[in-house]
Length: 303
Image (tube, rainbow, N blue to C red; front, top):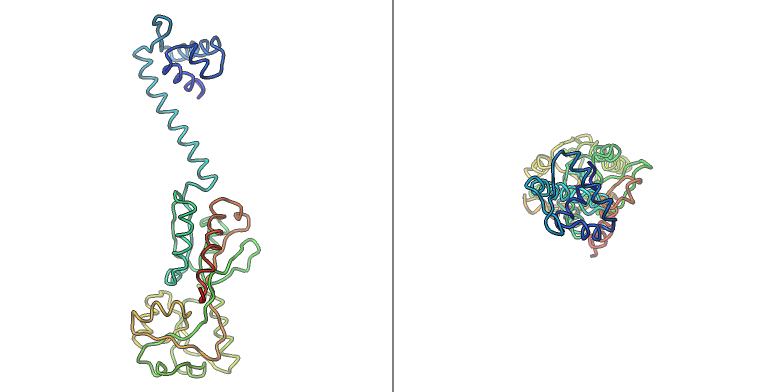
């Protein structure tokens, strides 16, 4: 039994006439009748019986017609779903993101733009470090990544979404909070906490290089894996941290913290999206890239 036999049978069941069914199917009546006879023989069941100039379904034929319609509807739905996934209208896309990326609203803006392009595609977000994102992109676990560092890999391509100056976040009653700006040498003796090096190796390298360039040793640097814990340490005055101004403007007022520019720290922290070069032409990734390009100008400080 082939799928076309079910389609032929379903049309004949609707028309209850071989001639009309053949005309509707654009086939000859004789081969159509023969195929239905073969179907009955294969099933060992009579599906039709004469009815004047036409035919009518037997009791078994009526049951089979209902099941045939259900099967055909399922097949059509499966075909439509497969086409929808292939052209980016359906399915689920997995996006890796770094903790803290949601504070600026940039990721949310990108997702909203993507939702307008692909309203029926599901979105799944997975928190990852930068290194974890790149590995997940390479093995296909995720399709898109949002974070603060660029991979050094020709198989991956990135687009900068935002770029913001790095400054110092500290408790509002910290000894340096009253200054309009601070300098790196002011941090000697302070406990400086950052996210783990693996989460953003570029940030660690830039901060250390800037301090060394000014003969400042940040010997009390520590890594705190949880962003909320890191901010809590800063809020109670146990540590200070480096943070982009846009993010600081959002989190500082919530916990009595202040952000101060560091005069001799010329480091910018960027948010970037990353995807596999070979996926660039796929409908879903293309829609994500287009969404990123759409919202990117709106995220600049001057927008």
